[in-house]
Image (tube, rainbow, N blue to C red; front, side):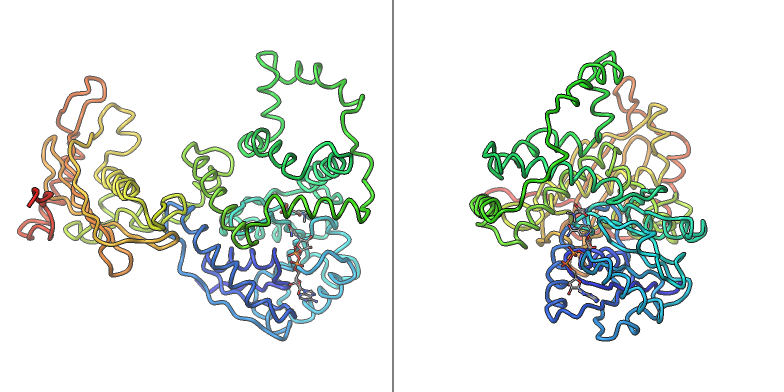
Length: 492
Ligand SMILES: NC(=O)C1=CN([C@@H]2O[C@H](COP(=O)(O)OP(=O)(O)OC[C@H]3O[C@@H](n4cnc5c(N)ncnc54)[C@H](O)[C@@H]3O)[C@@H](O)[C@H]2O)C=CC1
Ligand SMILES: C[N+](C)(C)CC(=O)CC(=O)[O-]
């Protein structure tokens, strides 16, 4: 496939996040931003993205693309198939920039705007090719959060909208197609409502910035991350559901509890109060450090949702399936070139939540990685989800791990597996974990095939037996790998 090129026009907070999202998904990225600090700032955002995004996947991301900075806008956008505009939120500036972009870019390129509030029809006005311009509104940090509000108008053809959605999905994003344009799209209307309310609470001396944040993150913030608003309230209606919930809490909307219609005046006193409270609350951390704290928390929460295949986690699982398709990490034993050679059973980056107080991958996570490699090996020989649902599986009876070298968050690791014995109910595996050419660990595991009903060992299916025999035959005569059969030396 031809190398994909994205142009980032405006490389601040959001443009930097887009640059990281494209680069880490294998695209070449060309940046145009007149700010002399843009290169440094994007470099710092990229460092944070590299330690957090790759580990969100249980499959390896493609090799990173090339990043270049350009003084000339036309040069940056010329070969790009996607141009993402993230200049400051001023309509006159955005319209001027589109004119320059469209004078130089390919007519088939997609021109997405990160605008938080402008409607696409406002961005398309006066353009010779309005159909090329769409709103693709992201959420900070763009390299971790999947939602993109894709807002279109009648000027955008169905083919372009489909292509935009496909390309966004390929970047691991979740395009939400907003078909009827409105100021601030969907999500920013909620954010603004909460923001207004919070400003009043502070202006009226009811809460501090810290108390507002606690009220969100200790309760409904966690709830919203996994079910949104309506599903959450449906559950809150109890057995009587949504109708009961609306009957009970509907009247309160008219009292009203909120001051949503007004905005407090940004007096010097209010701005000072918020800035001082915010300094007292979070000033001990630099912005980059806060970003790292935020990223670690987001990765942990999103990986928890992944394990439950729910919400943003289901989006990540879909991306993993796309990344694994056609690689040795998918398919059965027939897809292997040589079943006698160590078989690739795991390839991924070390997730942030696998690291510990020593700053490297925690010992328990070596077992987690080897367990995933064992699961993949089982799948390869035919012990897949369908087989397990039918009542047969493997239980691990013994494990021996050697920790030989350390590895940090974001680093790519691979596990290759050799079957030392696979016959009847017995399965003896030897895993080697590498980061590049460094051997990090070995894991030796003895498993027994079991009947899930009786919970007792029993022979596997003929298909599994045949797959194991094929691997055993291909390995016949090969020496045992170094370290196999080792045990901990007794006290000297
Ligand atoms: N900050 C946020 O939380 C979010 C912002 N957005 C939207 O993203 C856009 C950018 O916002 P931020 O990244 O926050 O702003 P920012 O101020 O961090 O970055 C804007 C960048 O644009 C550059 N720039 C200015 N004029 C330019 C020009 N003519 N050509 C190229 N680059 C130029 C600036 O040097 C700066 O680096 C806005 O439309 C905003 O509404 C969207 C989602 C979230
Ligand atoms: C504050 N904001 C309107 C710029 C926020 C957004 O547009 C989305 C986000 O990341 O919160």
